Length: 497
Ligand code: ME8
Image (tube, rainbow, N blue to C red; front, side, top):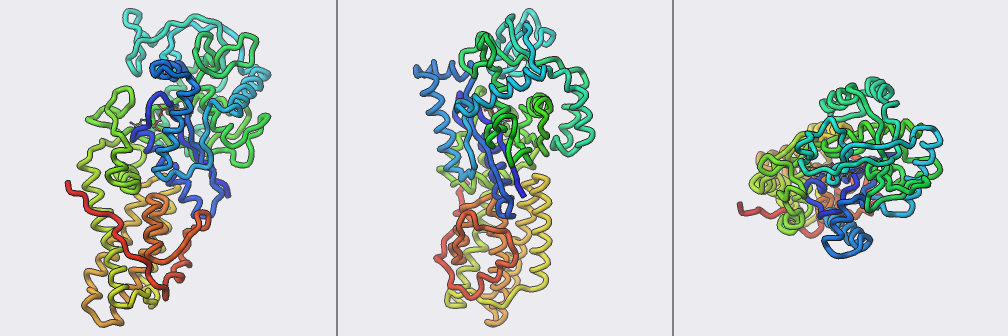
């Protein structure tokens, strides 16, 4: 079974911040989960490199736009490496293959009459890359209704995508497929917007500084969003109108800021191309700082590299996935970060593993005892495995981790209650066996969230896994018993608040 997951492709006018890391880590977590469930996963991310604001950013640095886009896409790749992001492809919209897709799609839709020439008259916000109709702008104060920046006045010949034609088909599709837009509370916003009427979309710019050329005699620049959305097709090898084996996407993760692009323009483009629509588009909330959206332009961002250097990749991944229910907004503070890190990673997980391996060394000459697993523990593991599966299908990372922590907490309670360091050896053997089996399952279950930590636990359990041979499988419990333990290490050290 295949699983195709995507993130937005990020603008490269500035460096990534926590918000970009959030979507990408979430997609990585899904990709890793579905891989260990044995699915054929394709995980696509990348960078959105066209548009005036990119050209202007290069200009400000005094380098060519090619030099700028090369160096900035490397900045993104470097941070994804530090964050252990296991993408299958990193796509750049400046790649030749992508330009071909965009021009190819443009031609197909023109041949079908879904793209036609006309004239655009209205406003354009370079920052939001958005055409704004005259009715949405106050004449004496022409600023973007979203970002409040001054807008450009446009009156130019342009090609249009016949978006209005898809008003009814989109509404019909959403009522027949209520699972597509997630979380469900976002659906009304989209449906209401469509019901107010869709106008055809200008998809070329005569005066844009930097973009893909339209395959028309005038050679305009293709509108950045029309270009960017098509990355999801190029990324999996779209050729001559055929998208290949991974189509359609199983999950497309986005932030709520770009919901309408992904749930109106994008599905309408796919309908025009006569391609199946994505199974699920999930719009998560925003990380805020002092109640304002964290954003490059507001300058209220947390530099992820600082956090990574201080607390490590897995602490960072864990916090982002655990702190806020996926779909809602969340306010970032270092205090919250440290609190969660110390209580859940240090006190619960790290201590459990350290205590257990320490007892294996002391009581069992560093050899894992092997008295099987109790029916109660097996029941708990079974329950957690099914609960986590459901959470991951529903993209509910917090609930998945809550469930995994049921095993962590149960094992800590077991150790506190049974005190194996102080009990007859047979009883200690039984307690430690439960702990080892439980820790093994925990190490598999946390792998999508904190993969480096799983590797460190596997080292202590003396198990070696190749990346493509990790399977979430309860039967593998038996492989631990009878082995020598590996070198013990502390997984997470307490942070002083
Ligand atoms: O919109 N909290 O790129 P972009 C949570 N290139 N997530 C955030 C966030 C925040 N404060 N800030 C950003 C674009 N994000 C287009 C996309 S796709 C075909 C083209 C995340 O660099 C979130 O995923 O502005 C959001 O949707 C995305 O970054 C916007 O990134």
